[in-house]
Length: 242
Image (cartoon, rainbow, N blue to C red; front, side, top):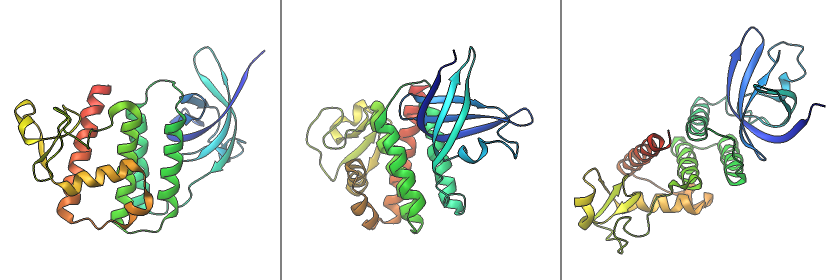
């Protein structure tokens, strides 16, 4: 007898197969990442068509075959309809989906990651904000996602020697996993000078206070530095992960 499995999941990747089929990558509440085959879903008469697509949160049902999981039912719970209508939102949604695809390879349950996805995509979909907060939503996801994976940065004390940080002599080291003091530069030749405002921004993001984050006034130079540090740290840990 074939066993049917049910769960709720977020669709973060899809690819077409043959003339009418499609593969989906879904991060689920109960199983973590699942790669699921949907037969004939691209046909206009498919009963699965309305319940499964990119950036949907859906209640899904599937069976496990010898070589793959096959979708048998899908009911959309949240479609995040505003994302495709706003180019910048859609671009950031795809960037977050790429993080999921890059870092999560196997099937491992993690409700905290699922909740972070739900929370962040809700904010991105529903808030009518200017370009700065949109970008901050992406970096909110990036830093908290990395932290849940075990790559959380040390930003309260020196990541190398654990001494109290001097706000006027701060450096960010991918190797040490966070902010280091000036004395530890000899052990971290690739470290980058960072200012206290950028460090405070990372701290606030990790505290998950949306109200404060949306009210922040960030100077362009600080924002550029923060984004550079964030992207480099993400790339560094992606190489370690793969």
